[in-house]
Every structure is written in structure tokens, then in C-alpha cells.
Length: 226
Image: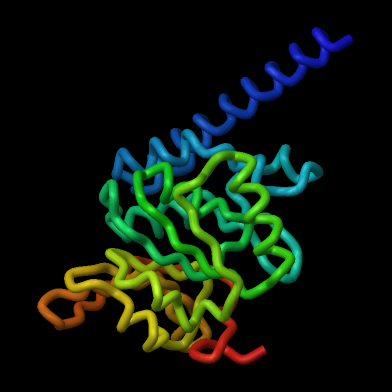
């Protein structure tokens, strides 16, 4: 029986790997993702292990999936677009606001980054900590706190990534961004979200629109109020 179970597990893992590579080929390469490190990271990170067992069959679809507490694991294309916009280099220190399931942090780690991730919901923080530890993503450090305050003790950061949308960039996060550095977030304007990339160079700020977005709201002292 144990041999049968082992064969079943191996077959299931192979099937998920096939679905993952199909996701990269069909969803990402066909929608403007050209950074090979982003493509390689999403082909490597097992997205199905970042959702409930009942949702694993949908893990490599185009959909965002619920992870509880009104939060979601973002669509694969959204994760890829945000990761590409951040222009991560191996060895960089990245601050992520909104750990959620831990999937985005795992992708950034697979790209060679050292990730500092802040989550405000205790249950999600605890589950992400357990999951990332079990999957051996040791380059991710987690903190339970209001993400709009950042993690100043560990800054500055080469990049800052927000996985929730707000009406403006939280000031504490701008001050924690290195110079030069890149901040990427969904900004809400007139009821719509747009991914923006903000570069800091020689203490000047340059904003670039990266296209439409659909993320949960950024809650905190410098975001939306609950």
C-alpha cells in the first residue's frame, strides 16, 4: 500500500508540474511577461501548495483564489506583472506588504531576493510562516504588523512591493526605499486600480503606469480604514 501511495503522490506531483509549466507557457508568455527569471520562478514555485487542498485543482487556472479572511492569492499573471515591474536582481532586499498565502514572497525568493514580508492578519501570518518553513523558503522573513508602516528596522530596501491597492503610496514605505530603488503597487484612482512603478533616483521620484490591476484594498494607518 505504501508503494502505491508513493506512486500516486509522484504522479500527482508530475501532473501539477505539467500544469505549472503550461500556465507559464500559455498565460504568462502570451501576455507580455518577458523576464526569464520571472518565468523560471513561476515555473518553479508550487502554487497549488499555497491554497487549500479543495482548491488545488484550480491552482494553475487564470483565477485569483480565496485564502480566507477576505483575502486572495492573486492571479498568476498579476504576480508575474508585479514581479517583472519590480526588476528584481539576485541578492536584493525586498519589502513585501501583504504576505497572504506567502506565494508572492516565494516567487521573489526564487528570483534570488531576500524578502521581508509584513502581514496584518494573524491567522494568515501563522499559516504563511508554517507553509514557507515547510517548503524551505528560508530567505523570507515574516512580521505581524500594519504593513503600511513597513519594517523600518530592516531597511532600506532595494524594492518595495505592495500586494493590495490603496489611494496613495504610504509615506513610511517611501522613506524605507533605497536610493536608487523601485516601489510597485496598485494605486486606486476614480474607483479603479492601476499598477504603478515608482523609481527613486538621486532623491527624485519617477512614476510609471504599468496597466490595470485588481487587488484587495490596502488596510492600515496609511491605507484604507477597515
